[in-house]
Image (tube, rainbow, N blue to C red; front, side, top):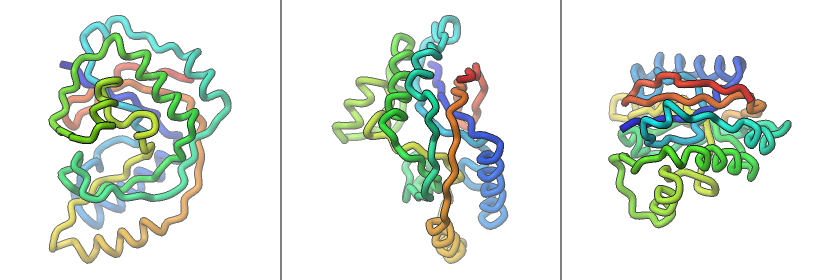
Length: 205
């Protein structure tokens, strides 16, 4: 079973900002989830067969037609409280505006991958109808209208020893004003093995 992730790698300016924020979190809270992850915007994650590694070739022309000269817009901090994907930590992210064209971009990549898809091996079980429908259609729950695009800083596990520092940190974070943009100029495919991400191929767009 092979799990892949397909990501947009942010430009140098945004990457530096994310890395510096990760360093700040580590200084205050020590080792936390996602701090060692490189800056990236997750478009999706999928379980694929071996044929993917031999035969997959991205149809860049279709993607370029969707994105044209459009830009991603990072517009506000957000916190996924008690995130079940991060041991119930509080996951700090910068949200990206969910334009219809960006949803179409995501769906187009999933459509190109469907012939290589195998059954989802996620250990997380959900009862929500929309999650079951998306898993059935795409092999991933957060697609289209149910996708909340973002870039992750870290997920902080709050306990009695750091709760006071965390509350002050959260207040500052959530009130931060952000407004930066990026053209989609790449899509990268990684093989995921637990906390390890190994680059398969990076496509320039």
